Amino acid sequence: MKKLMLALVAIAIMIVGTSFAQDEPSSTVFFFFAACENQAVIDLNGTMESGFDVYVQVFDQVGGAGNPLTALTRVSVSGEYQVSQVLPYNEGQTLLVGQFASAVITIASETNASNVIYTDGIDDVRDTCIEPAFPSTDTFTGEGVSGGGSTPLVDPVTGDIIGTGEVISSSGIFTPDGGVLNEVFSQPQEAVVQIGARPSDINQQNLEGRVTDPGLIFAECDEYPLADPGVVWDIDNITIFWSWFAATPELVQQHIDNAEYEVYLSSPYVNRQPFPNVQVSQIVEREDGNFYVFYVANLGNGFRPGEYRVDYYLTWDAVIDDGYDLFGPGQATEFFLSSCTFDIEINPYGIQTDLNNPTIPLQQ
Image (cartoon, rainbow, N blue to C red; front, side, top):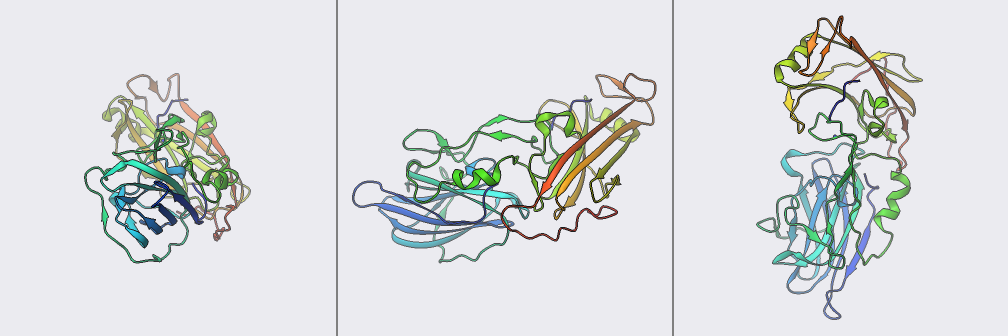
């Protein structure tokens, strides 16, 4: 098999946290977070002593891990406050229904985001958006406060960086969006002070077996254990992809011109249905120095529960060269035959989908 290089939490619930800078006066923050399609809504209230402010940042994975969806933003508050902030996502990023995000909420010096006296987090799955509960106030994302976590937030007790997690494992398979499939992040440090249930306690049961990019299915995943799609829900957008790499763009194009793919989806509901509207990407160079083309079939959500299998068969009309080996008629490798088996379950949050997939024929 040709080796390919490619790349949640809970429903919106209220988590409250309280931090004391010293015995008197004190600073407190209570918060509610909703992840929307292209923005986040965060309601904040509490009491803030002079010299401190609330900092907020939203990430595309649970526990403050993953990539930043918003800049690190200082919310200017003083005394007793009730404010709401609508934070647009960076560079037009969006969340699909059922995708997860998290917000990191911090009390820190108004002149130094790293001088942290309290931090906490809250996770949400994108379903319906909410209207801000309170008026907005001044915010700042200037030097020392901006840049998607370029100024890290530091836990005042442990000294650990929070708001980002380190990648500790992955499938090593590059994905069409420029990432790597099934990256596993270290768990960020949770707040020392916590009123109510911790996010990790809330998420643990529902998120067990979930990967960081649920619904993104590598067509040959049965060949690569770390490419297992994990637990897939009916609210996940199902995207099937496969790819080819070579040493030069010209050799990738040679593959494109001669490749014959037969890729099908089978389940209790359909048998060997070909994928519609398969998109072929531009040829791109990736981190390993090779050049890649990606084939992508977007199938939407609302898939009925059950076991699904992707069957993948690749041949060539003529001999091709990837810069390392020859493939095609009369060569040592004349074809590739592979598959990916995965299960779809009903989501545990009660979010309703039409459950009208898969159709015959498959529709995008």
